[in-house]
Length: 254
Image (cartoon, rainbow, N blue to C red; front, side, top):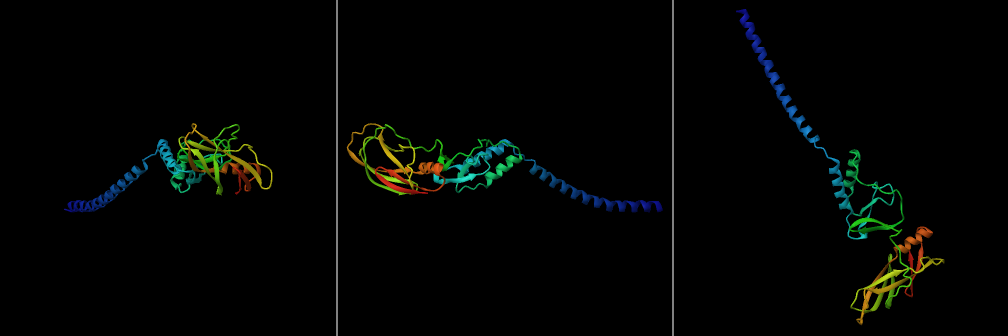
């Protein structure tokens, strides 16, 4: 009798312990499910190809432009040369671009940002092939001498200065051909005075002899940034140039 009672008591006690174990087992299962989810999230790896493709797309977006006035934000760290860094639009949000640069560095991915480590002279920014870039002075800006060039005649109505441009209102005969006006700098040098002086000319040409006798009007805009860049290269930043063009003179200060 006594032996049966003890066995029965032992079974009751084991039943209670089994219930506790079952609860612990359930908790353990929940824990296992959470761990599996975390592993799944962290298991998604981005390759260098993924990062580079996203970086190139983002760079294309923030550097896209319509005109030079759109550009003006330097993308620091894209080159070892100060004026070789890429240029973005003024209104571009560059946060994602720099985040991708950082991710690429951490993952040791090459973004193709190699360049020469020089700092060539520039005259602001430009939009070339709908991409923001620098305006490099050397080889980019140059008024031709137009030495010995033959052109068609024209009449000047007015010469005015507007910012970095001289606006020349001209009249000329024609109407049957395409006409061009080229800015020329015959001397390719400043005349020393205070302030210094520079003489520019307009060369009027057409793609073929124009036999029509219409009298046409055109507003020719002469970009003075090349002249400004030449001045700053010779004399330093800031100054005034007396610009002579087609019998008129303007004072260009910057």
